[in-house]
Image 1: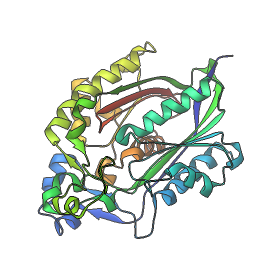
Image 2: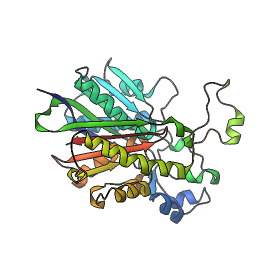
Image 3: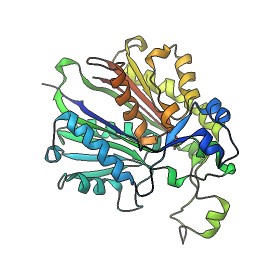
Image 4: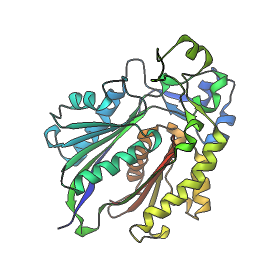
Length: 333
């Protein structure tokens, strides 16, 4: 028997607080038309005061575990993808581990931002295929609203991000039925790192944070939007074709494309350039914005609920983001 990793549970959570483009227009020199035309976003969710990254991760994880029919004692490894941990250290994963009562299993953070969930899937898949884990809980969770500059100087990026969490339970299984993670592809190109980043805090300076950093805006995320767009529409088709080539599948074989929800225009451009029918691409950015490490599980959760992903569906998930990094997986549900 050849061992593969299968997704047996999917969870998704967003806070109740809806923040519309009109709400942001009261804080920033922008408008619903300006935001929607450039990003495809109409609204996003922001966590209420006191709701933490770990809170949301716990909810999404429990949903995934319930679907998989397992309990805390069944998990061998926890991987938590996030760019917004509750604390700089320790990492987020041990706090989630404690909250879920998983016991003394390995707990890892992955800090790959927009590609974090897919990189985490790749790690989980490797652990399962090599026999080092049987059941892995993979979580992507973000509370980004507290780290955004709601000022007109940052209107290009403050309007994009939202809060949310998603989770997969991945388990070892028999590959003879053709289901499970079929292939992964991961890329990185640090030559573009400063095109999407937060300049401060800086671990190589003392102190790491200064009042000057706040006053200059160095503490807030920044983006060279055109550079990100150009690289994204170049990298995503390449890595999608690469991951399909690994299994011998063609674009037409794919039932659903689950793209990272950074910008609807990017996803539309990629779909058009690759001649992917619109009905095969599931987007939810209009309602949630970019939830970074939570976008891929959120898209897959809702695509399953809509019926686009069902038993036997072949899915390609792909993401591009800060670093720059890109990632793709093929998986049959």
